[in-house]
Length: 105
Image (cartoon, rainbow, N blue to C red; front, top):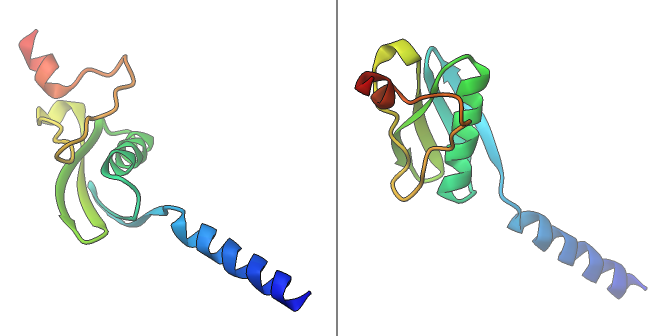
C-alpha cells in the first residue's frame, strides 16, 4: 500500500512540475516584469491582457532574461509600434487598432 501511495505522490509531483506558470512579478508605471516558464506566445498573450486590463493599447516586448520578460505598456496616443516577442504575434482584440495602423489613416 505504501508503494502505491508513494508512486501516486511522485507521479502527481512530476505532473505539477510539468505545468507552466506565468505571473506578473512587478508593475511600475508602464513597465511590467513577468516571470514565466510558458512558451513565448502564451507570455505575449498574458502581457497584452495585463496591459489592456490597465487601460493601455497593448504590450511591447523589451527584453528577456532567463524566465523574466520585460514589457512596456503602450497607450494609443503614444504613437509607438507594439513589438512582439521574436517568433510570436501580438493578439488582437479586433476593434483596437495598432498605432502604426492609426498613423496610416
